[in-house]
Amino acid sequence: MQLKLEVRDRVDQLFKFFHKLSSMRLRNQALGEGIAALSRFETDGYSRKCLLYKLLLALLSRYDVPGLEYHSSTVGRLFKSGLGRFGLGQSKPAFGDQSVLIIFVLGGINTLEVREVMTAISESSRPDVELILGGTTLLTPDDMFELMLGSSSFA
Image (cartoon, rainbow, N blue to C red; front, side, top):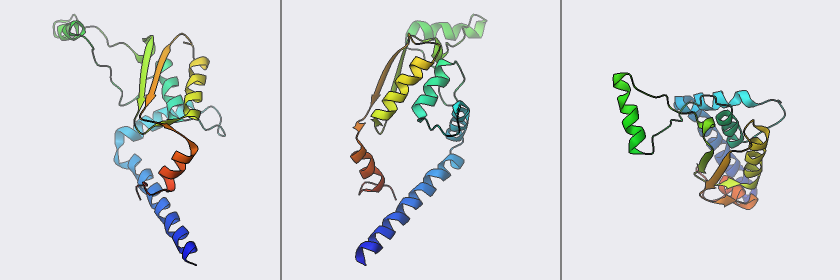
């Protein structure tokens, strides 16, 4: 009986967490716009691809992804962009035009996401792009189970 009550409490905590997570999309407008923009890359209603796959396809297809901005990396580029006030400005390059993309995921990635990202590169029109994919940790199925249902859950 005690085990049954503990399981019921855990399930209640899990659904409360899912409810909080789903309400984030309504509260954070930029996040909601970004997810809505990336949802157009679902080609099949039955295929579920990870967010990294959709993000990479959007970047390589030169679509505008809300919330992502290009920042100059050198003083020269910053100086050139400052000349835009005098009519000498240059447009910001698109992410899809770059030969090297760096994606770092806070919270970790799993091997399925890595495989789907490699699939996205091979399916794109730019297979010559070099991708550097990183994360805080490489998650195993046990890690993901512990994050969702374990003591470190955010319920």
